[in-house]
Structures are given as C-alpha cells and as structure tokens.
Figure 1 (cartoon, helix red, strand yellow):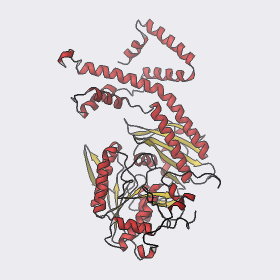
Figure 2 (cartoon, helix red, strand yellow):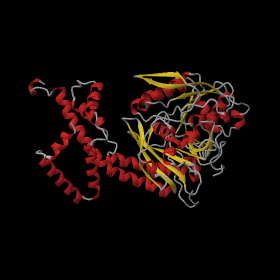
Figure 3 (cartoon, chains in turn blue, cyan):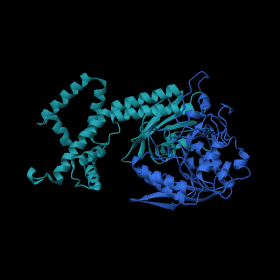
Figure 4 (cartoon, chains in turn orange, brown):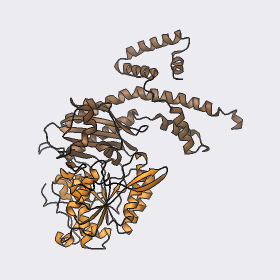
Length: 279
Length: 267
C-alpha cells in the first residue's frame, strides 16, 4: 500500500521472512541442497491422515475433494470435555480454508476435522487440549493448528501433549500467534511453527534458524475455500501453516515412518534460498 | 472467630457485598465514558493511517458471552455501534476465540463474512481485517478495519498496523479498566479475605454472583442518572458542581442525604 521508500512494518513473527531481513536467514545447510523431487516428489499424500483443529470443515466443498473422512466437535458437559460426531460443516469458513490448502498440495491425503469453536469459549483452553489429544490419537500423521492457548495454567498439559505427539510420530504444525506473550503449543520446540512471508507463491517457504518461529510460508493474499461453497482472498499466519502442513504430508507419504524431526529437517533442507527468492 | 463478636451472617454479608458491587458498577460507568473516548481515538487513527473506510472495536461481555461494538470510525462505519454478536460466531468470533489476526477480502462467490453486521448497518464490506484485542491476561475483544479506500486488498503491513492499534486499545482498556467486571473483582476480594479458605470456589462465585444480581438492569432510572452525571463530568467540571448542588438539594428535600436516597432507590 505504501511506496517503496516506506519502512516495512510486519507482524513480529513474519519479520525474519520478509524484505531485506530475509538475507539473515542464509546459512550453511546440513545436507547441502536436497532436491524437492527427492524429498516429496511422486506422491500425492495418499495413505496419510491430516487432522485440522479449527472451525470445522465443509465436507461438501469442492476444494476438499470429498477427502474429509471424519468430522468431530468438542463440547463441554459440565467439567467434562466430550468429543461428538459433527456434520461436516464449518461455522466460520476458516477450517475449510485450511483444508482446501492442504488438499491442493496433498490431494491424496485423508482429512479429519476437529471443530473447537463452541458456545462456551470461557473454557476454550480445555476444549483445545481435548481436541489436540483426540487428533494425536486419531491416527493422524500431521495435525494442523491455527490456534494456540495463552493459558499459563495449561502450559504443562500442552507441553506434555506436544511431547506425546512428537514421540508418537505425529507432527504438529502450528500457526504462530502475533498477540504479545507466549502461546502454546505454537512456541514449543516439538512443533513446526509457521508465520506468513511476503511472497505470493505457495511453492516458496523459508527456514528460520533463529526460532521460535521456524518457517515462513505463503499467507499473503491466498485464494482459499470458504464456507457455503465460496472462496475468499485472505491473509494471516493461519493460512501459512496449512501450506507447511501440506508439504510435510507429502514428505511423510514419500518417506514412510520418518519422525517429526526428520520431517522438519526435510522441510528446512528444501526451503527456498533466502537470497534467491523473489521479494 | 468467637473472639470478634457475632458474624454478620449471610444476609448481612450479602448486603455489604451488594453495596460494594453497586459502587464498583457506578465507578466503572463513570470511567467508561473516558475509556470510550480513548478507544474512539484508536479507531479514528486506524481509519486515517490504514486509509480504510471504517474501523470498529467490539468488546467481549463475559456475562452474555457476546461481542458488543462499542466505538467506530469512518462515515459508513458508525452504524455498528451498539450492535451485539455471539462471541463464537463469524469472523470476529473466530478471531476472538483463536487470537489469530486475519485479513479477508474479495469474496468471489459468498460475501457472507460481514452479513450479521451488514444486515443491520447496510454496509457490506468488500474486505476486512480482524485483530484480537488482548495481552497475556486474556482476550478482551476484536478490532475490525473495513475496506481500504484505494480498493486494494489488505496486506501484511495493514494487518500489523491493525495489530499495533489493537495493542494500544488493549493498553487503554486495561488502564481505564473499561472491562472492569464487578463480579470478578468481588470474587477476588472475597478470596483475599477468606484466608482460611473456608469457602469453595463455587461458594465464592455464588456470593459474587448474588451480590451483582440485577446490576445490569439498564432500564433503571438510577443508572440513567449515573450515566447522565458521567457525561456531564466529561464535558464541564462547573456543570458537575451545579448538578451536585441540585442532587444535594433534592436529597435534603427528601429528608435524607442525597447518596442515601440514591442508594435507597436501588433496593
């Protein structure tokens, strides 16, 4: 919007991935250059299950190609959290957007939707925990998280779940949260955290060797599926994360049985050169 | 406790708590007019600097779990003030719940993202930014910015600019305690006094809730009076003195100090 002379002001977590700051990401790569074809070529993500913890997924939306195999929602019954079957619908459009992005990259993968938006958001941290636990135990290979919790009281629970996912060979991909203060699990080392970069290209992602946010992906002006069979042009970290989820799904389909850290290493090794990419 | 004379009993304690709750609510109302002025300046600045058609701030009401639009700026945006939406509905609800800032625009087939607001204000935005108001202590509401005046979609810079304004609004709210919630303040006070932890969390919540019951009775003439005085206080300290004299005179006529009469009208 502003002229080229203007000082770019970007969300904190996007800063390392945008404009001239990106040059600082240059580094010696542990594997040299890994060809993307070797990392995830020749697969469409078939055999992988991807869980989407979000606002629900519109199962009938053409952008998800009929790949939603299960939809559940989290509900609070008194002090208990219960997981119930949910019709494949989306109360906002956001979860459908994430699912559509993942499906566009890994069209062979099965999608699971866990809806966490409910009528009682005062206990949303608990609902989110329950959703995450369900996702980890659902047989999903990758879990896409567009939300995180700021609850200090739940820090230990989220940490335990992130570690459980890691040791259960489930990769958590979490959108970075730009609200000040820590948020969980997006800032844990066991997850893959993602912010938006400033390049309008789904095939461009960057690795940041100075965490907590390790990856920058396409989250600016993304054409996504929205509820009611619609589409929308959107911007935000929560649209960057599903791009990394999609690539990670392909990597895990190509190299069956690899661990979350090996998947992360492939993501880093196939990231764009920060100097060579279009700005 | 026996050495300190008889306990006031539940009825007595409740009466004291109710008195505190009324005073808290009155104080919050007095402060909220000043707080709203700060929030209004934040949305004004957002409209000017992001070059947007409109901006608004909706704050969460924990009692009803709804987002209430408190202030707005931009010629086409002011109709939204006073509007309420469910805190788990739509884009604003999503942003409130997830804390994730997002920008939406160019709906190619289903421009329903603004429908709740659009139906009631007649303004259907082409694009919008929604950013949470919040800090480490929690999320308070949502700042929305509608339509860039140059017709371009919002970009990452706009999103971050909106986040900066949201942080300013959050600081303003925390500072003026616009969100001050009498029930939670009371619960905190009760817990602090209850050093021997004789009350369960449920007891504390029940006491605080009983003490604040009826507090949000907007039809009450007493609150209308309090709101009117709050507005006068904002405009002119001289007028406030005059009002005080009048209220005092009315109070004397009723044979009681004015504050007592006002309090009595609450019962």
